[in-house]
Image (cartoon, rainbow, N blue to C red):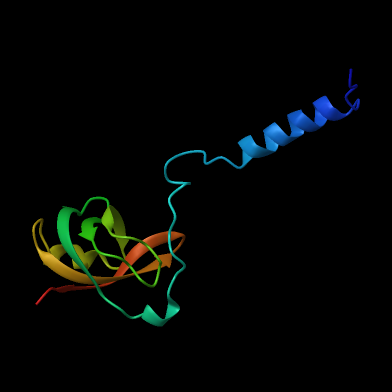
Length: 115
């Protein structure tokens, strides 16, 4: 009969804990996003306005990939750098926009009607 090393059970527990610690905590943490593309810093992204929330200063856009942030296309809400932008659009409008991280949040800094 083979005798296990006295530390074998402890090593097994540590290995299992390490594997569990590396597991994703939720769906967003497991989402793989490409690295930001700084060359596309001034690029505009196509989108369709889903909702304009003037009270919260929020613009919900269904957008394509945002290269400068390395963000894939999705529907999400954005803060706006200037609330006047919200007066120029309504749900259903096709737009082009640029977004930057401001105060830790993705924020629309440029917005124009799509041609």
